[in-house]
Length: 189
Image 1: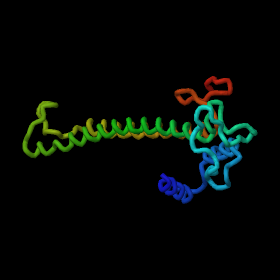
Image 2: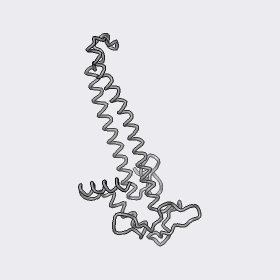
Image 3: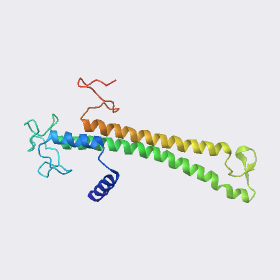
Image 4: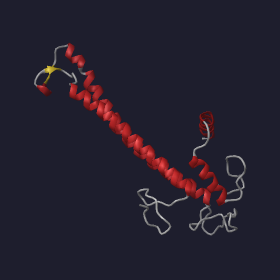
């Protein structure tokens, strides 16, 4: 994981500055704990797992209290779990879309590959006796449009993750569908 993270950081540096949401998250982490070092990581003296029942976090928060939230978890761990939950949801949606796209590709490829039967003079019964497996213009258009729909779906899924990451970086709560909640716990309009 450290190697992958380092490669991604190198790519980020080559492409310019940090995203605004990353800067916002770093500021949020710094407010949550005074033990954040000047580099890009949280200091090693912070606990790496949530406290067990009955334990108290050793990391004081910026307001002088303990570095745990109302649920007893260390703030940066709670944030990490929230980020991980958003990423898992994104990956689940992405995998579902990729399965549909793989099925689409497989089915169209099978249709095109059946052209071999055309060379042997086989007839296709699906449209009354044309060459076997030859895709119609409508088949090609449907395939093309289906690819575009898959691309649109992946873009939408990525946009939802980006919105979630921005919301998490700002420390804004959300409902189960990811809609931002105001201070009263009501959905923002």
